[in-house]
Length: 103
Image (tube, rainbow, N blue to C red):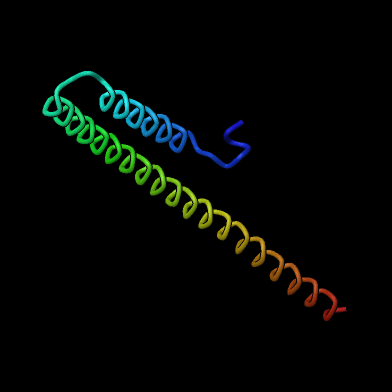
């Protein structure tokens, strides 16, 4: 269903990660702990979120690079097939002209 709306699995995963981080942050803010301990936990949570976001962005970049490379390869393949077909058509036209001219 998310594919139909144009969302990728990575975007959904990022949404879950961010939602979890925000929810955990709010839970810690309202938890009955000392301010120092809460700040430490928030700092750790922010570092974890940063690391996960970096990992996810690297993964997305790698996937995008792979998709671009596959697209280039497919383009080159289709272009060569089309060029061969055009060349074959030109040769067929030339042969037909020569056949008609020799009559």
